[in-house]
Length: 396
Image (cartoon, rainbow, N blue to C red; front, top):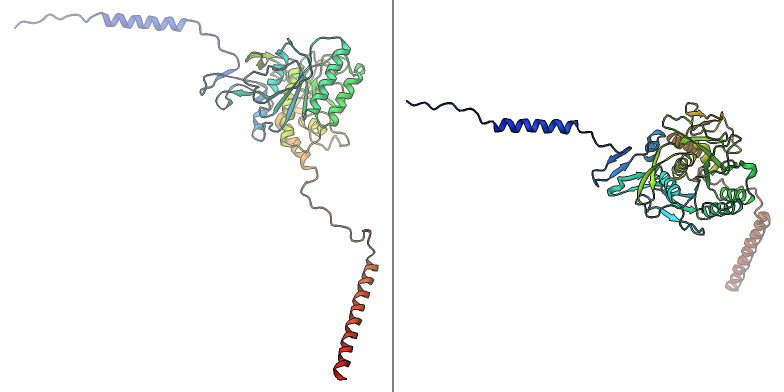
């Protein structure tokens, strides 16, 4: 019997295994590509969804269970807004009257996105979602530069245009270097006109140590300063700050369909304007002063400060480097405070009081009753006489 010699296994499979292991190790050691900050993938569209840390920080998603700002128009008085950005195109209207050819779109586009960006793609799941995505935006562009008088006149016209355009909330996402004492008469009158029209005005607090800068220094305007993700105030915020709101490293819309981070008091004012839109949408009966009070600002006139609810508690109060202690914006608390203020208003369905029966209606009821009685008596006598004549004729 002839035996076959044992043969060694082929070395090829082992070599392939070694090469595969080497390739895997090499891939493992390669540096990972940098991850995009504050973005998540949208499975439906394959696009990125921008994350705005301010939304969960102040309870905006909780408020969205009640309202997303539908039916409210927010005016953005700022540099022009990119009208073609996919996250703004569905709810953006552009004001007219200002020559803004060649103006920088960056600031106005960023502020508009913070307020009411609605995203894009399938079910608007891609892109950026702002504070009040169902609100309408009215961009009222103001040209940059120019001398003091020219710019003051342009700002005054823009504020008036925002008010006459039906804006219930006006975001003045800029601040001047001058305090209220140097406010021009045209600007002062424009602010008071907008307030008389029923608009809530929100502005950047500025960075002046002797009080908030215009326009936040005006009594009809809520001056807002920025806090970071730890709710620490900006050390440069002005001493006239009345409310703190997220305003550091906020991702927002940028010209050309992109996104960029923005920081500062203007960003904080824009976030606050978005929350004001949510409050106004949920409680349209509230006055502008009551909306400001619900946000955590000064109490409405002719109300007792200790008895009226506000949107912030002592647990959410911060103090700036200038010694300014003010509440930190809390959207959920603001909506709850607004509900309390609304409940205290007279019910629109309340029955009208019964008429006063003793009131003078212009009719003398005693005279009217006598006239009716005389008329009835006269008709009775006439009827009796008629029957009597007929009776005589029949018997005769």
